[in-house]
Image 1 (spheres, rainbow, N blue to C red):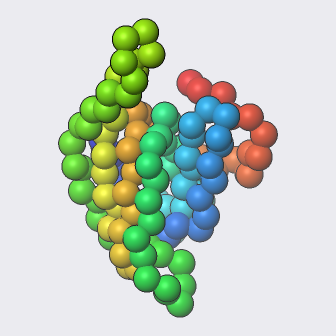
Image 2: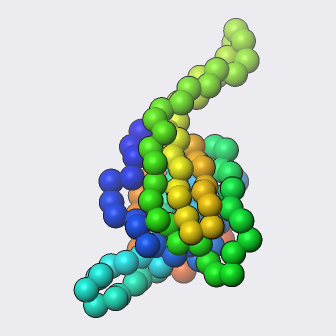
Length: 125
């Protein structure tokens, strides 16, 4: 499991898309590609095998901007017993925004170029 290894400060959250069939959560963001020239580009912050996405934000007059994130470490769940026992391991982070916080548990993530809305099935890498 990996944490965020790239700069996401000042990324504006445009929208979030959930792919329920394969547990993928996409944050479509305006990403600060070139600070000196104030150049922002649309990117996808993709979380694989996510659980428990929670938004704790106040009503806000504009889109929330990511200010920082806090890695809250690995978490482990054990569900069921015997043959039905499932062990789940995820990383938990808090995305701190201009409107509050968003919490997310996931296995892996990546920052990729935005290539339009993919409302169809998304394949894992």
